[in-house]
Image (cartoon, rainbow over all chains, first blue to last red; front, side):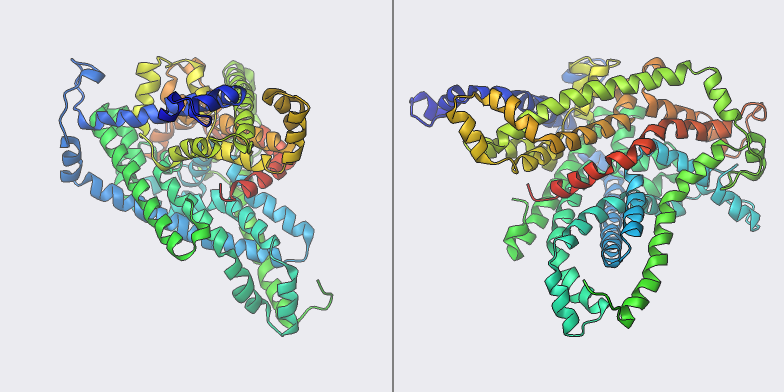
Length: 312
Length: 294
């Protein structure tokens, strides 16, 4: 900005004037992110206040780090962080292995028709809303009529009621996540495989390499960059959580929270159930910082080994 | 690649075809289940639970829904309204932004890209956004809140910019030399060449709006304003808690409650399933290009 006042040719104001049409064209986007992303960032100030109805939202007293202290002392942050991390490791780890495997298998099949049909169907779950996922889950697990529930009851386990068993929801949530996202990752990996030149495989075949050897020594190493990009994207996603997945599957079933509560669902409840703005914002800020630091660290690690794959 | 199959290739195929077929089936079964359940007689569901094949067929659930279709038609209307307005507005702004960010002679394009990208790295969280929308902008029970919340995302803007890279710079240069203004270049050249990009980003936006239940839950409190997915969510959860606890609600035998839930889910997903075969390829292209490093 300073340079502009000196009237130099390449100042910001000069650019604003000469390229005013382009600035106008991008202005709505700049304003949009300013209002809906940057102003809420300033709103994390609320994490350092204690909400009081009498003084209103913006007159609430400043309490420093007290909200964080409360969260920490209750043990809330501990178990929420643990759940969030473990779920995301399962999502990212198992998810990528499954997607890579399916993509590789699909790429080796000869029947174009079979390949296309199966890929399309596997991509289908990505397109339905999580409310529909909740409908599926209801049809499978609810205690009066769910198909899985009835199956186990018919086997003689009369008391089988998934909604009263926190333990199995860990697996259900991970399986539903894999189900919903298998197509998305497969599409990306398959595109990357298609870009691998046939010559590598032909040369390997001449040398007598088996199918498994070709996959092991050609396909997988060449998928590493794609994997790193998806990994970095997924780590960025921890910040946004998987609120829809957890909320639609578990909802307000309090008896399942110990096994299924993550930072997002906790923040949501502080807002909707308790309207404890200070505490909720503090938990949200903790999540944001946590995600931010995590992605910085991973990006730094990637950059050290493979500069070209890093995000920035 | 070659005609003759080696032994290991045959073994590979024998194992892989069934594995892929099973995975595909697993992706399909839930859809099959809700369709089958929606056509099952409610009392049969109450006795045996949901089945993959109806033990007794019935279209009562659909009859019931369409006997008094006002609620579902209204929520359909709301969803269509939000989807159309949101998609077109968002698409227009994103396309312009993608064009500007791809203009090599726009000096600040990298800085602006980072300004947009940074919002994916750090955010204020759910509560400050909620307070901004409800207490500061006063948009509770206003569709604008739902439309604004899904209007654009860094992913879609970067996707649009990556798409635009395929438009030759020389074309824009030439138009500039001919005296076309920056906006004129956009409307008369770029829009016409960016067809697939616009279709892809538009479909992503439309899918987001169509499937959205989360921001309506946050910002809309009047049941008459609920869009389709949130309306469905409320139907699903209405007696769900009682059901899950194993309590059978009185009068359930005459009211096809269990079948209706599934029929509602079918009605709400129908349009997506019908359009899916035609639009799928745009999403495939979109996420393939979007996954390229920004």
